[in-house]
Length: 513
Image 1 (cartoon, rainbow, N blue to C red):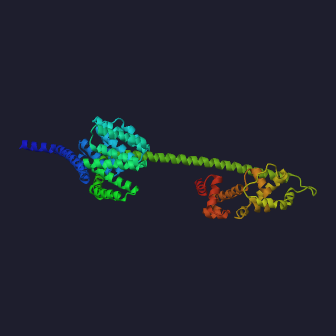
Image 2: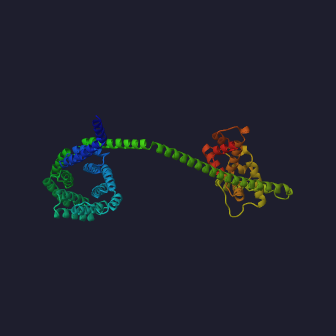
Image 3: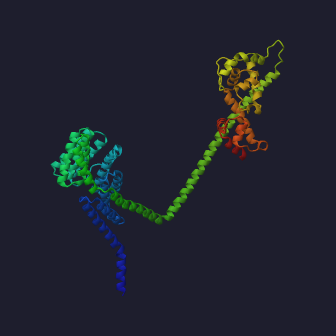
């Protein structure tokens, strides 16, 4: 009884290994069956068998079967001109073969990858693939030499060096013939040479090559190149207005193409492979998660903490930088305001300390007022930006008196908050003209009237934002309208240009104090 139980347990322990061996053997059988289907041009049956082979080979040590299956799947996609998907499977095969040290399979997959890049017209990736592939190892020296010619021809074609491509493909064709290689090698080069001659505009030579390709394909039973030859001959004869020949080859192309390439069935079959790959990836991720859940949780937690710390540091740094920048700007504006106020006070002091002018002495402002009418034309012709003049327009006494009058008007927030308040209005209020007013502001403060006005308005805005007891909490749109701005946008732009922040940011900063 004990011996029987021990034997049963031994069998059960060997069951997973036996199942793995069965799957591995199944994978080999399926790959062989797919190869048989492929040679018989039963591409859909081959694709179905290859999909099953990939499923069987997965999880076993039969990497060779997996590599062969992936390579063959890529070949079938190439037959249907789906080079992007073919490249996907060739790349998988290449990587697996390289990891396993299988140089033969690596060379085959690499050569097919190069072909896909060339057919897709990607010269840069084709060159990178060629450089990475290095010397080919096809075991058979004839195959190695043939593929070296072929690859160089493909590279020349994708680089648009068609004459060099013709030379290399001719070398490959001659080598295949001289060394009695299988006919499909020669047929493939005839098709390449026909395409190149067609691209060069040599239609007669192209037809000759495709006719040779047709003949050899029929003799050898190479259906895929025969389909291509029919299609190309139909197109070329149509260009030469040989309608009867064109229609004959078109019928042959449609008939043979429909029998070999069923697009709907092909999409259905390859959908199974795509579904398997998706499911395989999901299961693999799930398996990795189950084995490394604890480690992953720690990594995620650490990563989140690190990200949070980086975000916090970045936020603090940015806020500090913005605060420092804002403080510097506020200090600069404060200093500038102090200088402006000092200048205005100095002008006022000089004016009030100076002896009153006698009746015989001319009043400076009166003189400016006398010039008002005769300069009004030129003043109105100016814009309200700035006035620069190499020579002073006014004497120092006249300029100082005019600046005192200007400052008095500008200190009246009600006046400057009028939407229509401008340089002309200011000139009228101080009894001068726009030319003198603009010059006095620009020459004294180094700024144009528009900037000068915005500074007074923004100064008033900042005062109202700070004094919530008196002015409450007006919206920015209301505040902009109260200060004479035609839109909240222009108010925001002026505020940020002068104080380095938006009104909302300034209000928030004030409330934090």
